[in-house]
Amino acid sequence: MLKEAYHPNAFLSDFRNIRLGLKARTKILTFLEEKSQADAKTIAKGTGLHYGVVIHHLKLLETEKIVERKGKRPHVWLLTGLGQKRLKY
Image (cartoon, rainbow, N blue to C red; front, top):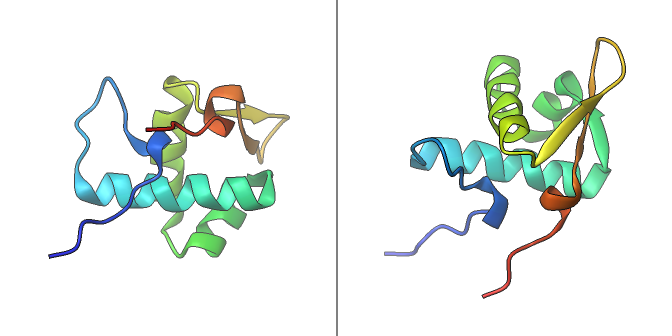
């Protein structure tokens, strides 16, 4: 049985890390690494996730200071310094 690889920043310290959430956050973080910044609608289209799922996980990642939002609605989301730093084992 193969283990799935998740983005190191997909793990949240204050919330339960269930598999579906880790998958969604990994997709979002990978997308933002490639595009550098995007609004939630663009992220949803690019990752294949529903808009509500993207917003939920972006807000969770924002509380962990992994991503931040800029500007007025529609907000542009981008990785913070913490979000850009990958953990090394």
